[in-house]
Amino acid sequence: MGDADVRTANPADAGVVGRLLWDFNTEFDSPTPSAEEFATRFERLLALDEVVVLLSGDADPTGFAYLTLRPAPYYDGPLAQLEELYVRPDLRDQGIGTALLQRALDLCRERSAGEMHINVDEVDTDTRRFYERHGFVNVAPGTDYRMLFYEIEL
Image 1 (cartoon, rainbow, N blue to C red):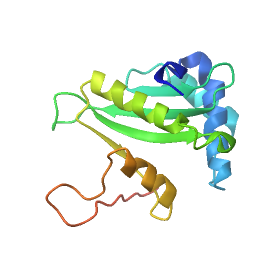
Image 2 (cartoon, rainbow, N blue to C red; image 1 turned 30 degrees about the vertical axis):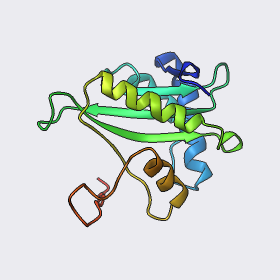
Image 3 (cartoon, rainbow, N blue to C red; image 1 turned 90 degrees about the vertical axis):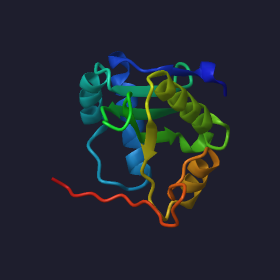
Image 4 (cartoon, rainbow, N blue to C red; image 1 turned 135 degrees about the horizontal axis):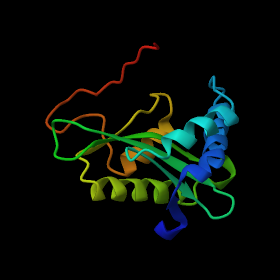
């Protein structure tokens, strides 16, 4: 799969993106809003400059990457967060995730982002290997300790 097979979603794609995110969450038995609720939210989100969703595949998208970009004082450009990256299970290991990730990285570089962050569950060793293979680290250069992610539900 080449970069040409990855395109930027627009508000008209909200239903497809909502369904893909719902598929992702239900695959891992995560509590989730409905696909329709996600679609309604993505109609609004996809109109924002600081939100980008990339879709792979043509008529029937095979996966997506959901990015947010936020201002940061550490760079002249934004800080990028790869919120989600998902490929349909039956199509994994075919380069789709790599194509989505590469296009996401290219887009962030085009927007002068200083860094891209991604959160991965410690037990998800396949996903951790995927990101590490693409240059992501959880030990900053010059240190010997892992970076951790914390959250609180509000």
